[in-house]
Amino acid sequence: LFSAVAAARAQVQQEPLAETTEGTEITINCSHPNISSRDYIYWYRHLPGRGPELLVFTIKGSKALPDKAGQLWVSADRRWSALCLGRPRRGDAAVYYCALG
Image (cartoon, rainbow, N blue to C red):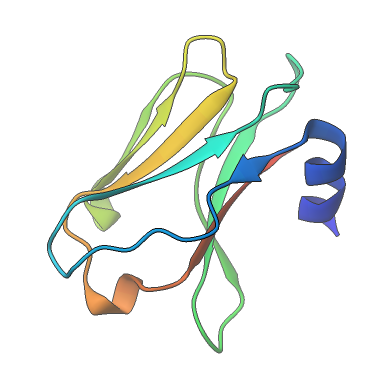
């Protein structure tokens, strides 16, 4: 419900599919052109058979994900963000999504 509300209000847009091979860096993009100054940016992943897992969140700026060998990038105007996984493994195959709130 949280994500659906955020998406409806803020028009969060993501590419439907992103693929890579094991060990090859991948970047997953998210557009949120109507973000408000109060909104945090959240990135989750949903592994098969498990609940959603919060990976990272920020109000502005970029952030490292040391345990995932990744990085969250946020544009200066906060209208887009991107999750970069530097060395993805098979176990990282999941649905990744962003949300605002």
